[in-house]
Length: 134
Image (cartoon, rainbow, N blue to C red; front, side, top):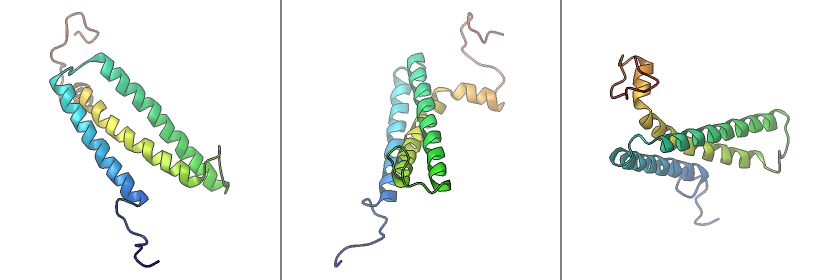
């Protein structure tokens, strides 16, 4: 074992990999936000894709979390052919990707968030034939 570093938290370890992946996903999300801001800022198709992706990945985070709890509670070796560490790896990966999508989702729906939080009372620039017409 000469020359091996045991227990390091570098890029080669699991936590270092997930931290690096989280930074990568956040940077990619910020780049996507800038691209959306300067091109198709409020496209309904992009909103739909981001919302459906968040729903599906959020469901996968929940399912893998429940499977991890079941596996730990009943002391099972594998569930669906996956060990607890495999499930934890997938759970963390889905959570990291969902974090990036959440940033994009907040950007795309910022006006609705402002109205929901009470920071503004009116929705500006709404077409006359809109559902939100007052």
